[in-house]
Image (tube, rainbow, N blue to C red; front, side, top):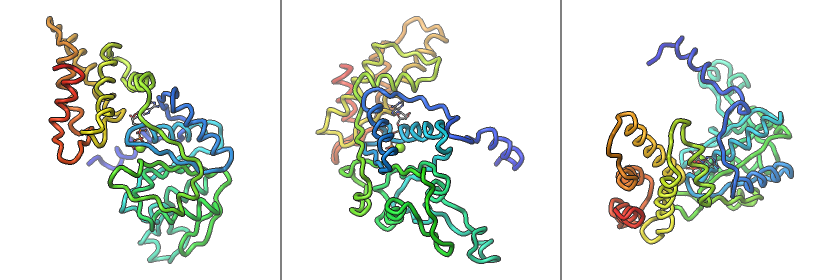
Amino acid sequence: MINKQKFEELFNQHLIKDISEEKIDIVLSGQYGKALELLRDAEATGLFPALVGPPGVGKTILCRYFASLRAQENKNKSFHWLTMDESIKPSHFIGSFDPAITLKKGFVLEAFNPGPLLSAMLEGGTFLANEINRATEYSQNTLLEPLEEASISIPHLGRIKADKDFFFISAMNPEELSGTHRLSEALKDRIKVWIKLTYPDKATELDIIRINLPEHFVVEESELELIYTIINETRKNKIDIEIPASIRAGIAIAKLVARTRFLEKKENVKEKMSIYEILTDITKNVLLGSIKPKPGMKVENVIENIIHKTLGT
Ligand SMILES: Nc1ncnc2c1ncn2[C@@H]1O[C@H](COP(=O)(O)OP(=O)(O)OP(=O)(O)O)[C@@H](O)[C@H]1O
Ligand SMILES: [Mg+2]
C-alpha cells in the first residue's frame, strides 16, 4: 500500500477536475456524428435519450464526449455515471447516510453523502445510467421521479428540484442479449429518443482503430484492412457466434501487430514474419475472450474457422 502522503500527492496529480479538460479522441463520421446530433436535439428539447447497442460500439465514449461539449459550453462542468447490474440499489443513485455521523447527529444533511444522480441533479450536470436494463425493476423505479418531475425524494431530508440543466442519458445493450433484465415499461415510456448504435461501417471502424493507436505505433493500411476483415467475419457469422468481436478487439489486434513490427525493427530481424503469420497468432489470443460462441460451439474451433476463412492459414 502507498502511504497517505504519497496517495494524496498522486491523487491530486491525476484528478480530472473538469471533464472539459479531458482529451477525448473520438471519430465522428458515420453513425457517430448523427448520434451526437440526436443527443443535442434531445438536450435542446428537454427529452431524455437512450443509446442502444451491443458491447463496445462506442456508447460510453459518445456520452463522455457529449458531456465534455456541454462542459466546454459552460452549461455545467459535471458528468456522473453509474454502471448497473442486479446489485445496484436506489442508494447508489441517490446517496446514503454516513453511519458514524448519523449515530451522533441523526439523519441530518451533514451526515448525507450524495450519490451520482443527486449530484448531477443539483449541479445541472449530465448523468449516464450505463447498462440501465441490467438494474432490477426496483432500482429502475428510482429514476421515474427524476425523469418525470425533475425532482427526487431523499429519505429523511426531503424533495429537491433538479437544476434546469440536469440531463439524463441512458445506455444499454439490446434486450435480446442474454443476462439483461428488461427495461420496465414505466421507464421506457419516459425515455423518448432512442439512438441505435451498431458496428460501424468499415471506413469509420478503421479510423477508430487508427485514432486509438498510440502515436509511435505503426500499422500499414493493408494490415488494417486484414484486421477489419477478421473482425467483420465474426459479425457475419451468425450461425456460430452469439456475440461477435467489438471495436475493442480490432484495436487490440492492431496494437499487437504494431508491437510485433516494432520489435522486429528493434532487434534488426532479417526475415520479417508475414502479416498472415502474425495475425494467425494474435487473432487467437485476442478473440479467445472477445467473442461468445453459440451454445455447444467450442470457441477455439470457431476461431480456427475464422482464421482459415480470412487468412487462409
Ligand atoms: N467513435 C469512436 N471514436 C473513437 N473511439 C471509439 C469510438 N467508438 C468506440 N471507440 C473505442 O472503442 C472502445 C469501446 O467504446 P465504448 O467503451 O464507448 O463502448 P460501449 O458501447 O460503451 O461498450 P460497453 O457496452 O461494453 O460499455 C473504446 O476503446 C473506445 O475508445
Ligand atoms: Mg460502456
